[in-house]
Amino acid sequence: MSSTPSPDAAARHRIGIYDQGEPGPTILVMSALHGNEPAGFRAFERVYERLLADKTPFRGRLVGFVGNLTALDKQQRFIDEDLNRIWQPGDIARRAAIPWEERSSEGRQQAELLAALEGELGQASNEPIYFLDLHTSSAQGKPFVCIGDTLRNRNFATQFPVPVILGLEEQVDGAMLEYVNNLGHVTVGVEAGQHDDPTSIDFHEAFVSLALVGTGCVHRNDLSCYNEMRARLDAAGASLPRVLEVRHRHPVSAADDFQMRPGYENFQPVKVGEELAQDARGAVQAPETGRVLLPLYQGQGDDGYFLVREFAKFWLAVSALLRRLKLGRCARWLPGVHVHHGDANTLVVNRGVARWFTVEIFHLLGYRKERSDGDQLLFSRRVEDF
Figure 1 (cartoon, rainbow, N blue to C red):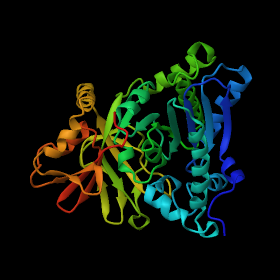
Figure 2 (figure 1 turned 180 degrees about the vertical axis):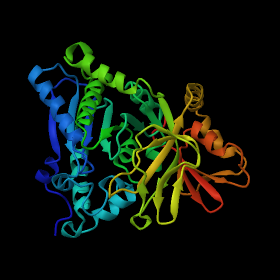
Figure 3 (figure 1 turned 135 degrees about the vertical axis):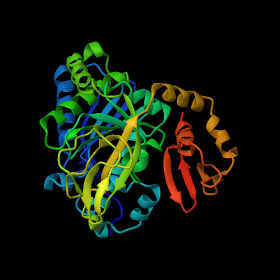
Figure 4 (figure 1 turned 60 degrees about the horizontal axis):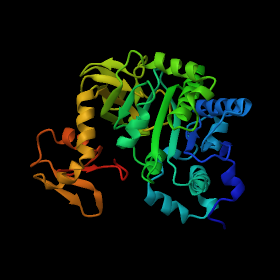
């Protein structure tokens, strides 16, 4: 039995390559990691066909991928398991030891995507690599981008005139975006709107188009649609804060019988104590005042909703300064803090000692991935945090 995908199987996930042989950055665009999110796939096709038709001058290489082909054909989020939750290195290694025929549908497609991705990364020179992961959600709402909170990711994401969400990727384990980020590349996740709304395709088209210019692959004067695409995102983000951070995630499972109350959209303000949903235990209330993000209105998924609030420009600047000065290295000397014995990028914090503003301080220093372990908190930072 084979345990690796054939070259043809890996290649079927590549949906378009634009390369004129000029040195420059590599842009990798992932779409439809969830099979009920076809908008990114269709948007990439639009951009790719325009580049070909216009013979647009291009530095570097653009490659489009489609993720969960089997689920996309069935128009459902996944078949056996969520393809965007199985990218932790340990899980990848464990799955690689399973015979091909015994793997889940997503396990086989992960191996195919990994082979296709590694093939493209192997072709890249010393130029930067940018990775865009295109998604939609079950709820209506304005488009936004989310990042693993490194300074390089921030610099790239803030070129898009829509809200940037900090801390969302750190709330989810096993996302492909985190896997690629930890390989040392610049990554941005894009949420364009509701799954079946035609405007979601339009917004994804605008994101990819602006990324071509933002990376330096295309000069804005050579992109015939640049002004139109810029105006599209300008209008979408005009009334919203530019940077927000995740304050709360409500995880759910099938046994919870979670039912979001109807009518919530991305960025809709909510008040502490407001009833947002019902589950098997009763009413689900907002633990604090903020804005709701990604409310769950579909059968599959393990995120009921997120709460976000604006992250002030002042603290954004302070955070950037602290990281450039590499003061995160000093965090290990704070009272009640020590380095995790198995991971130099994770700090262990004794709740009983480090009590005041612990979460806020570690977020400023770049330690945004937070987990509980008894009476301790574990804070991790991205491997590539500049």
